[in-house]
Length: 415
Ligand code: PHE
Image (cartoon, rainbow, N blue to C red; front, top):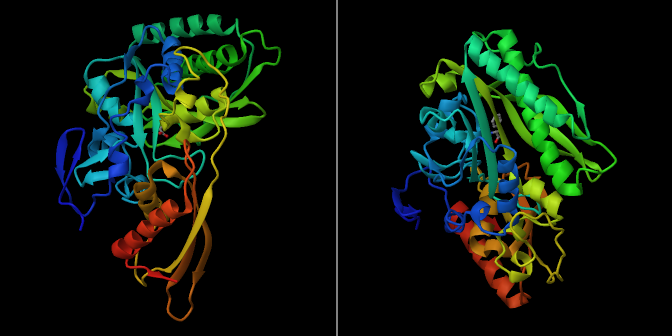
């Protein structure tokens, strides 16, 4: 009963054994929350863009990319787990929904862009809870310089300028060495140039963190310094690589990934004589803490009680309106002996059947029968609407559809 074609943003694709994009996901592809006036994600995009006034700001690239753009051009290994159909959304073997904004790096550099930000919706198959949603938004930023003494001079001048901006902030930075054995300079890169670029990346992002969490969130006069920490990281398309965490409201928050762009990426883009850095950050997690939004689904709400609370350019604390009651339904089943049943398959069936009525999915039991070698699973689905009360009848109907699809698509035996 799987359809032979699917249509996404006016483009038609023939289905194959990779096809796993559901109608629920397709319905999100034209929402562009990061451009919706007054929406918190749009304000946060604007705030980040304002920290990079001399960069190109792109924000309307189609989410449909080839696996080649999303992975291969960025030096992902052929067997990288992110490529699996259990982790990513495919229209078919040749076209997918981007899993990160880095998928556009080569195309931006190829166009001749040397300093740019790109904001967009990205898609990952994932569990369901208050902070995970299969669609979220990222901002990618990058800057490249000529790999010449003049380019080096430009980096140093930029570093001086950013240092002077930062000297006016109240920020405490826990740093790591630019380059280490575990986080090496790339072969073919001059270590002095690479270190200067790392310094430029760090200054630039420390300044951004101050704009977002220092100034915007509490006014520049907060007495406690803003704490930012740098951690060595790994990405296939950068080296050295770092993650940044910010201490905010009593917790360390993971904010972004970054690093010095792999030369292979720049070679592919036809700018082999340049060197530079890139970063990528997720908007939802930051917006949730800045605006005190307790559930990631609220960003997708069309309820005026949500949208009406915000004004473009302003960071405001969300005032929760009363929650409607939730309703739990359990389903237990045996998976077929040789089935490759994945938790994300269950989540996508629920999401596609119930839409945003599902608040969470939890596996409450898993048991391997020693004789039959079959696995028994029990999932608890938590249903709750953001904007109305649900009747038990309505939810039973939804849950029955979930069960029917489980049986039809995965041949499971309900217990
Ligand atoms: N694309 C990475 C992610 O989604 C983040 C990243 C961007 C890391 C640019 C390094 C450079 O996790």
